[in-house]
Length: 122
Ligand code: HEM
Image (cartoon, rainbow, N blue to C red):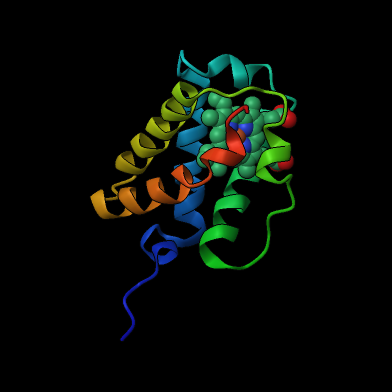
């Protein structure tokens, strides 16, 4: 039998939505990055909806994400490495609080870290 995919281990769409809700809530209360989100064009609810589809598309292969590319979504923001680390901390904390273990956290961290060139200001 095949071992379960990362998508399955994260609890599929419902599990990913729960993690994304917590991660975005963490961003809004994280002093390093909160103003990025309170000043965004998107509401917290829209952010959760879009990020949920982004992660589900990436992990399941079923294309439901209709938002911008990562360079377009973050263009002109000049996001720093410290801000990226703060956002990654929020996501790992959200995964921990949803009961995900070290292996899944490490897999997600690697996937997100590899997006660094698309997110940071050049
Ligand atoms: C690997 C890391 C990241 C991923 C995967 C990611 C993913 C996303 C996604 C999917 C969207 C929605 C785009 C859309 O629907 O069109 C978005 C928007 C946004 N992201 Fe990120 N993001 C990351 C890092 C960051 C960081 C580090 C910051 C700032 C500290 C940030 C700030 C924002 C803001 C403010 C928006 C809303 C932009 C707007 O209102 O136009 N993101 N991001």
